[in-house]
Picture 1 (cartoon, rainbow, N blue to C red):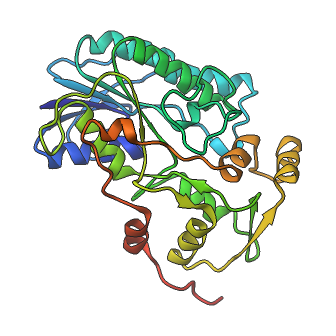
Picture 2 (picture 1 turned 135 degrees about the vertical axis):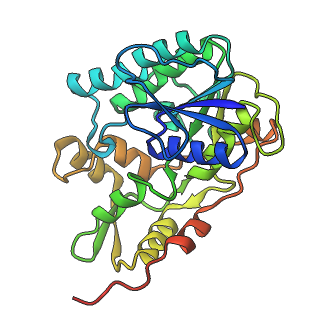
Length: 311
């Protein structure tokens, strides 16, 4: 197949490009910067429609993520900047894609955090309640994509080689051998970027087994099993040679600190994501034949750095 990938120079997009090329497909990388391989087609999601001439299918990874730990979503500037890409950019994308099979990569951040998320199905509310501009604009963008007949994928906390967000931000929060976490231990879904890339290709019928395109609805995408938060944190720290003691801050106190800005980088969104169970139900994606094959243990084995050097 000839597959167009938007946001091809980004974390998720670059992995989709590599997976597509490894499967023998031709790839056009749409974005402001070239992707890791394949043909570069310049496109700014805030202006103009992408040129998908010759493409058999489209995988849309381009998104305005902003700085999630600091994104309270109340500021008009952050909201407008993310709307320009995640919503208005989606409108341009849909016009250009026409009737081609389209995968629109969304996020579990679209789910309303006010309802229980111990087992989140795709019918969980997404109409309101998001705690930041990212969640709100991704929810608005995916509504457009679903109405146009796209397959929407909702991963949570994507990690893997080249991760610019999840692991680096965790390591940044270690101070003087201590790491503060809000609330007690919880169960969390995480998504290996390779699992997401496989789902993207499978959804447009370009997977390793020659799948047919998936039914155009929303699908949760994550690793096969949820993780215990504290276990994950300890494993990540150990793999990067960082020694730190975990201290649990009562959730109400953490929420107060987030609202008042007393702890830099801590927002209501971050507290919510770290202090409550968030487990994605993968049943719908599994019915399409997709199976997650990567997990955090494999990633950490490949990236372990050993003990931290003594000062």
